[in-house]
Amino acid sequence: MTELFKVVILLVRLSKNIAHSSTLVAIIIITGLISGVSYTLLIATINSTLNNAGKPRATLVLTFAALCLAVASLRFVSGAVLVHLMKKVMMSLRLDLSRKILNAPLRLLENMVLTDCLRCSPVMYQVLPMHTFFCRCYV
Image (cartoon, rainbow, N blue to C red; front, side, top):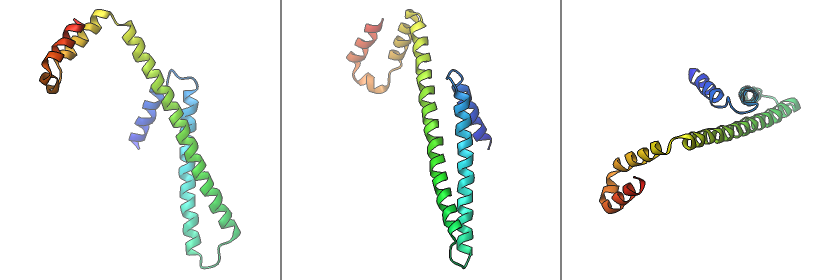
């Protein structure tokens, strides 16, 4: 259960710059909980129908159909809102990272590229002339 709270806290923290994010997180949580309760009621309905020796009543059929529809629709809504929020969070993170890169001094970026060239993988050392060419281009 603590893992679930950690995920919710991370989701709220990452989405703090997004408009109406707390409302979207609340919608995700509420629809997920109602979907879980509906699924539990669906299993209870199936269990009570199997344990009754008589014919299924019309109310059981309607209850079963309503619960099936509720489970499917609530899971869809919860998943769709979660995907929508995650797309906005990813876009926000990308824009923030791009702003940080654009605001960084050019010399710092050049040193980072040079450092990355010097820490190349062993595969790059097999193509040494290309490796030295790329490192010289960034210096």
